Image (tube, rainbow, N blue to C red; front, side, top):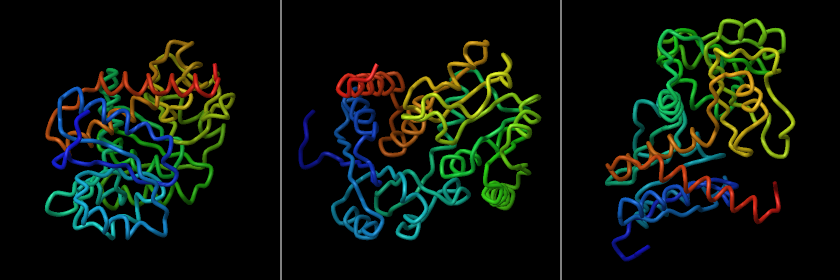
Length: 291
């Protein structure tokens, strides 16, 4: 990699951010396309976010990815938002070119990942498990295309607040309910797509699943946003009965590809980015002695 005074710097900011896959994904894409960009991860604490953005302006940092806990609060330090980020009320991508513009590519990432796997949302019923940050970012994208979207969450107030925001800003009617085995069993009976936007099944809780196997059907598309492990129990059990499965790394790559294209104007090399991420995860497992 050649780095000079003309190299454009892109970063991911968050806390924690030490184990982010984004640097390996984006640097592999930059190198593959011979673009004069470099990407690094920067830990930014909540109490230093304003200073960090002032510094990014002064230093000319060209692109930023924004992860927890800054996706909402960063909005007050930007010049403007694109329509999607405004609707969602959260930002995960910033372009710093003359002015600082905030975008949200999470919903684009989910829709792109679904389409890449042959899952068409039009006229379909989708269920989102969870109403936290991940759900907030993707639900607007799903609401745009699904004919019926249901958000289930163990804290019903969060699900209600999220559906109200979608209805107010996107003009789409979305249903919500408290997440329980009974409600999930009833809703999943005629669902086409189930998206796990909770942390259930994430390392070190690999033995857990948000959906009991007996509720799964071969006709379902099951999308788990968790990518550590790459194949969660939910995905493994869904695949075993013949359902279509999509892992969390696929979403990470596709939302990252949308950010890449905002910064560079070039089409993101999805396969290169995916292979780089898989190699990185494999190396990390080897270093930690995991199977």
